[in-house]
Length: 393
Image (cartoon, rainbow, N blue to C red):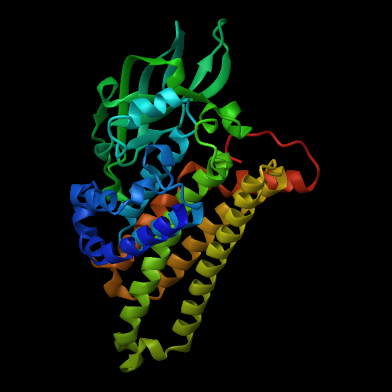
């Protein structure tokens, strides 16, 4: 059922692209994705793609979800980014104890969550759970969510760092500080989350030790293979895929523009007839194809292991991260090449090329796109050296 419904959602996403494209500048100017766009995505079932079936979700294949994300981001980078990071959270909530899932989805399966995982706040041990305080940044889509997932380091009884955990809080426990004013991904509304001594019961936190082992309390309630994937594999591609989508949107806009563009400096030559422009388009297309084909291959192999119930090999998890950061790099190379070949008119405010270029580079600086860290881990694995897990493989 999940895949048939999932493909129908992808088809409906395709139908939304013209209006999302028309709203791209409005989204950037408002510094937040319009409520109408989020409502439309919710109505066609996008946010349910990775949600457990027991709560009305579709438990779709991850490639189905990522395909929808790529399409959305090809129309509007900010909307694609928010759709991806908010859309992947149902998958993570499915790993939490069932009580936490029921608190979020029990009365409204359409409830959405935002997140901020960098452990910039403090978690103090308290009877029956933890008490959180501090400020967490970059919570994309927080204006469209009523719960938040926050990362923090939990301490042992002696005050020493003991575990990195994700804490789940309702909107009544935090405030949103509107600080998002950037040169790229301006429409994501990635504001700060401020918490002042909120109590989080034990069932609303999840240990990254369990996440890394792919053995979490929610898997008993949600036994589908989807929920046996590594966090670092799915979440990292949820960041790379919108960037591939932005570069895809830039590619489409560039080709359409170049077909009609006349280069005044070359005595009226049509840009499409310039062999150098043709080469650049070919190179950009190849980069995007390469990034996407690696994603499809890796997700297929991950799901093969998940369906068979076998442990996902560490070399595969390392390769996924290698190809993920390389995929981001290939998308950036493609959008750079296209931007450089678009001419001065592409600099005008409101043109899609410059917006995609800025958005893609803004997405590139996300910590999960750090190429050296991921590539070094892969290299250590190839040389038989010890891998220090960082929770993102």
